[in-house]
Length: 323
Image (cartoon, rainbow, N blue to C red):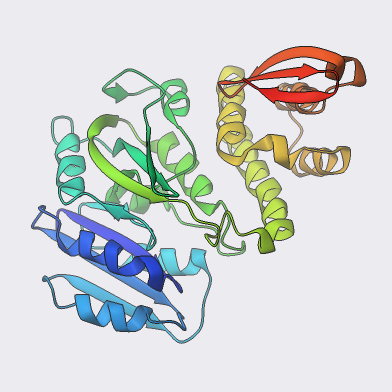
């Protein structure tokens, strides 16, 4: 049994795929299984995959003639994984050669359910480091785990495979390819007993205008899915009997990861989100406060100061100024 399985969904990412796959086959962790899922690509991805799939043992390649969707493809990858841990790497990103060795070693002292690292955003030739939100080596309580989440990413973590099997974790299969990682992540951190944090392993997250969550052509559908995923996360907290404090931390996480300022930018979208959430006074009250914060009154727009997700905002004579 491999120590780690790494799942990479691939769809029309020929511009970035060579760098991604080269970083994966160059991993210093020897006992690693790579699972590459070509989800119906119609560009040069298949040719690039073929060039790399013999570069090391334990590479599984799955081809689909048509795109079956992100959720189904990822769930298939999980079902094919035979490693003790499961990791994920997007096909337009790349990792340092020792990335998975360092993450795996982070789990060893306590056999942690999840290992979680910092990462670097690569945008327009610049590299921007993203640090942890908490200053601790381990998270145990649900409050600690929720507070540690920078966003809904799964690629900056590895997960014990038993988490998936024991708690039947999976990606939703009825959503388009927007924000589903948040749904898997909230489940995983809820059931994990120990999350180990490190800043030694480095993932390189590439932002570009054609990526799934930045492509302007998909904005309407993306905004709709943002509401659905936010509602799922909050309903998950309600259904699993989170305490009031834990529910508010869950909402804070959803706000950070899903940018709820966009999701509830008007009365219609705010009402839609409220209608999707099960009745819960603490979440509804806090959502209302968020809506008021993100939609200031005319008097607040004349002059007010706010701090939203560590971003300082000054409203001055109707002008929004980020400090």
